[in-house]
Image 1: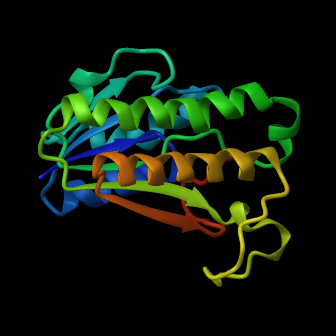
Image 2 (image 1 turned 120 degrees about the vertical axis):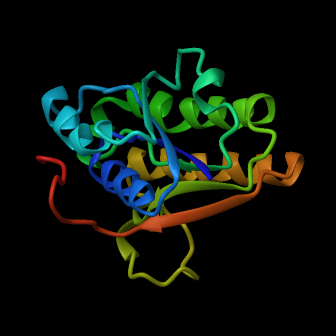
Length: 186
């Protein structure tokens, strides 16, 4: 199965890429290397995957680049690419909006053109959509209290609207705090 992972050079993305390869899948990784933290860290995150014959990497920006060729024929898309972090989202809203909303909109539109066999589109969201009362209970109302949470919830809603209108086979996953090897330096 051909799997596409956006945000492939990040903490969670790089681990997902390695696991998909371990399971025998062909994997296309895509990452813009947005300078949230040093590119050298992201390069190290990709080191193991780059040595694998079933891995292809595309350094592309979902906000601006033509990327249909990179996602062509993907059967599963794991959309992990995003601008993370709550504090910085207050001072750099345009960056968060473009990375978390515009990039998502461009990706879901491209799936109609380039992914005729798409079986699943997995959108990685965040517990920040719940606001200060995030407890792991998915029945809680969404009340983000940061621009980051607002942009991730907007991304969820874009995906849901597209799923309703264009039969996007959507799954939304909301992460709570994730820790481990290669986690973001902040």
